[in-house]
Length: 173
Image 1 (tube, rainbow, N blue to C red):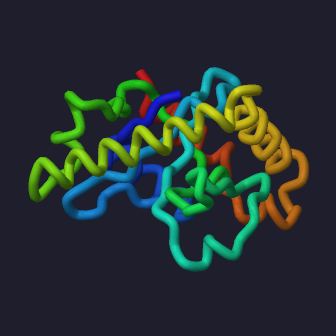
Image 2 (image 1 turned 90 degrees about the vertical axis):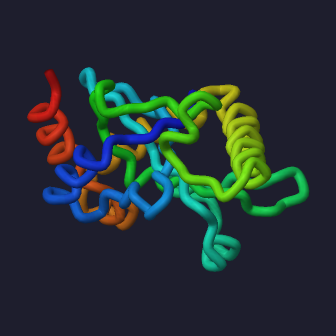
């Protein structure tokens, strides 16, 4: 798995249909997404990586929510599987040392290095969690739960995946 930045205009198109889609544009930087977490019917799904908020410390991991915690228990980020989205490859930019300056502004090299360190640490945690494809299995289980039990409590928190796939089809080549 890798981190990606997703095109702002594509996200805007998704948000017109599904307001639960998370914003990606935060002034001087774009929100990273983790992917591919799910590959279903030729759609490739990506899940937003979010900064932790105080409320997240009290929340426990669920099918649609996963904490990324350091070895000391500190909360580094969260993955909101309920807001995963299908994205055509043409709207993706892999986040790496070569592309990072295009996706985010930094005040200095130290700030840039700290951010790269954080992303690397988060990816180590993700790789550790995903040794048995547990992230992919989680995404798949949530996807089918939403389709088969749309009135379920967790399903109601999810994006409308089928509607997003329709928008994805409109923007695919």
